[in-house]
Length: 273
Image 1 (cartoon, rainbow, N blue to C red):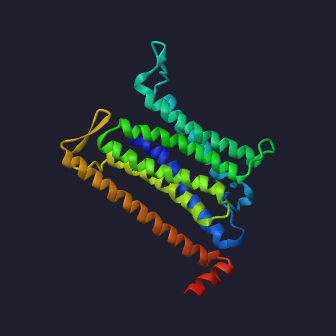
Image 2: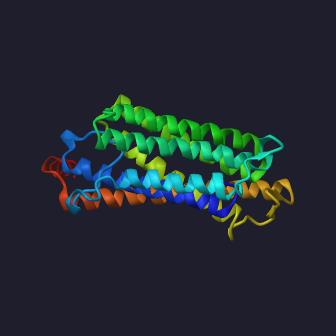
Image 3: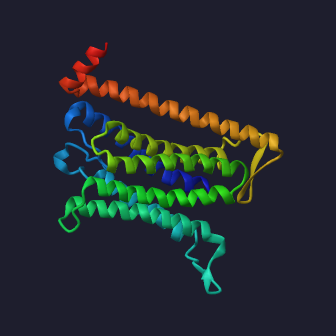
């Protein structure tokens, strides 16, 4: 994923799934707080059920396309050199393993929901999702130790966001009726997608910090002062993304309450006021 498109593709997938998860979590809670349950995926209502599994199909198809980009296109179908894995494409092989986990998660969840071959409770599905995030965490954790400087710093922030996804997914299995846990999971996935975008535009696009540049496959800064400035800029970018997502969550909550809020939820807010 050491390219602009390599960050934008997974970023789009995470952002779409995360944003839908946030909205669905808020809408389900305000509609009926007493019967709320954590969901590892959220069905699309209406349309006579034709789009019910849209999120799962997005994960499966999007993950498969990204997997093909990393494993086939990026490697130019060159997997082995002199009988061993091509060392120049080891990153692509690692990324393919991570994407394969999310693809497997989507397929397993689809089989569980649409067939009787693999009936799984939501708690187990949450743990499967946590496993996929754990694989992603390990990948980018070791990336952050091998990629030094500004690029490594962006990976460290990404690792923290992935850790939020892991903890909220596990918490979803332990606390299956918790609205904050379900909402936190959607926020974490959304922020992860946005951070992929931020990394693409900063390190491989027009937002490269002053004094730093892309040299070959590495991000190099002219001095430590420029690198520190870039890291401070990354902190500010993360703050703005978190702030923006939280504002969007509040707006969606207020809109949901006014649109189809449950009487218990509306009366609770009236009592607080």
